[in-house]
Length: 157
Image 1 (cartoon, rainbow, N blue to C red):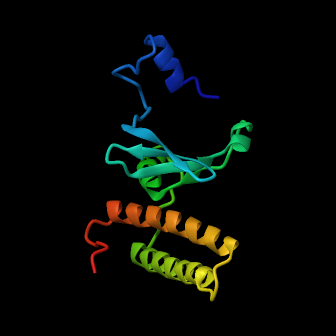
Image 2 (cartoon, rainbow, N blue to C red):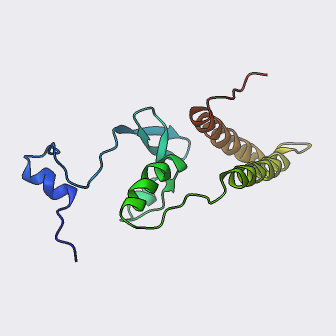
Image 3 (cartoon, rainbow, N blue to C red):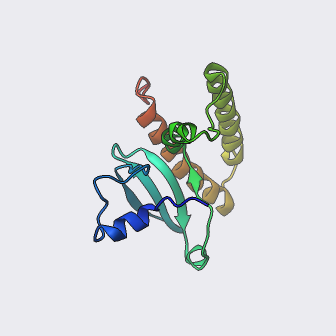
């Protein structure tokens, strides 16, 4: 077991403030954003440019649990990979970035086709309207994330 001090211990030793020398620990400047949704609150950790690092949707039942699932986004992976590699731990970098990019685009195209098929109906039922609302919210978020990271494209037609 390591005798290295945790970040919390260092902060406690420094009257509640991060010390100038915080050892091997890394601080990512940013914020936590709370966004009301219809059925909960979207909680996201963001970097200093407001890029999404991680997130989850909070609901009353979820808050009663000590642990919950969170989404870990590639921006956080990009911060973690060099840190993991410097510690001799495996990272999640693709071996062939071109193949990985093409595969990611193919996955998104397949996903978009499924989403479109789920709301292409003759008459919209209440369930279809719920699906459309979820699709609109998530795809708007996805487009915003893509546009923050991939600045050489736009939604202009």
